[in-house]
Image 1 (cartoon, one colour):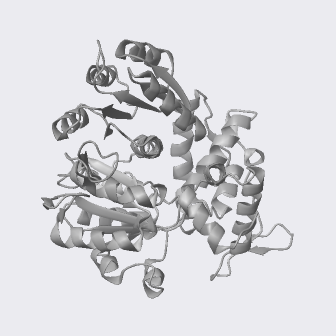
Image 2 (cartoon, rainbow, N blue to C red):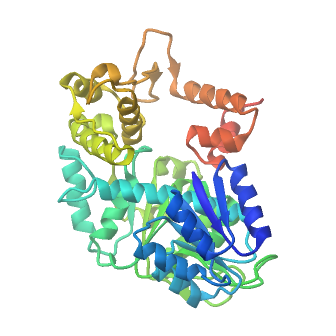
Image 3 (cartoon, rainbow, N blue to C red):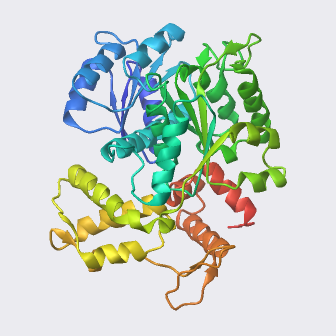
Length: 445
């Protein structure tokens, strides 16, 4: 990931560059808007962190120029002069987020990473649109999901989307928003598991000036930013119990109280939640509130894993191939029948994300303009799935899924000499989830 930081204060530029670098994110810096424009023309950036008020060309001017020139790069605006008016103006001009000085650099890093991930998913959905929706497939399972989306999208009903990681839960959430009466409003997404617990409440509800040390200005929470649109709460199963109580109250009363505030603020955002966890089991184990579960579970859409809709694999593979051709500048024309047979018979425990990785690698190493079965590196391991007895075998002795996961985490931690941030990034999970897994498996290094 490469990020451009534009601020006229040298200490802020250096501070952000250092914090981003600690997360493995490359950062270039610009001290004014004109320098930022030059650098944006010369290089590709996954995100821009930019001060709103700068001598000469200000951040708002750069933002307008970016959008007029076709740059779709996510932008986070920062300012010492911020209030709700500036925030709304910046968001209307195309900024994705807004932070008021003084700010916690770690918070900016978290928001930057979340925005880049969301932008990737948005482009994934846009590049793979079909005439009848953004969730790709023609299997009976997918047709049923598309029918449900069409039925519930025009209603204000709260929706819970369940399914394994990589099945496309945010793609479905965005499709519900696109077909709803709120499609003209914002779609605001947050990955609950990707935000530290001590920051999560202020992210959702915002805070008043002076609510705590460092709260120099009022901050608008995501519930308010999603006004007139949709708020997507991904990984809702990772929400702490203390916040579950507050979320339940918001859903019931349709209003929030900012941290440090006393006056309730009405909210009119539709809520869509998603999880890859078994919430019913969590309720039984007192890890998730039963009353909140029923509030979220008004309408449920369950996304089947890719191995349960194998007939969709060729269509998905074709869309992914076309997308990577555009991104990589390649001209791979398709798959041999043997390659498609191999893909259709693979179990894809990583779902669409795993299919993407396999195709991307095959396109890089393919010897011709067509992907053959020999080009596919499936890296099939011997894994038993808990509960259903389903397994893959390569002839070696098999591990349970839990043992395989524990072994993978230990190896990653050893590889990074105990650095949990780097290990979580390698494993594709949040640092908080990794710490939870370490505790669950009693891992000691």
